[in-house]
Length: 164
Image 1 (tube, rainbow, N blue to C red):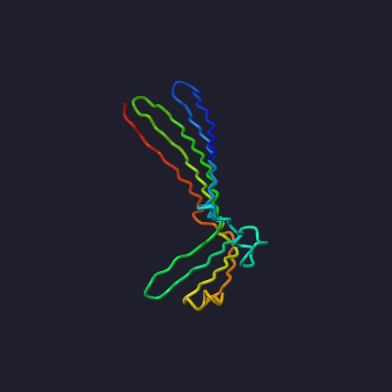
Image 2: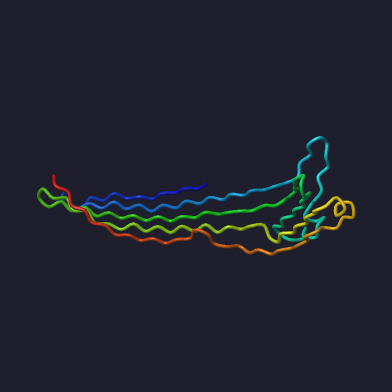
């Protein structure tokens, strides 16, 4: 995560001052799901084994489902999210006698594009016969694209009066 802030406090006279802040924050997350070497196992490239290995960000899933017994699955993927935020605030203060007047603006832009695994290859086996014959009951391949979730731009203004 990166975070930067630039600020300036200015006093123009005994009655006028200004506070300015500009901030930027960036973060990146990744959720890799991989096969391990537990117990001496040699992991395979599952995406390549199901035919989507040449894609940049594939998901491969094989599920074993036996009615009345239960289910288990084996999957690999790498979903990602990048967050970016800009924030600008400026507050102007004016002192008149016993009154302190404040005026300002607050601008905020938040973008959080999510990159799900793409394409997604699923193989679901629903019986022991399907496993033994290597025939999935519900084979499918779905494509995804990068989507933007949580993007927002918000600007607000304010004024306030205080008595000293």
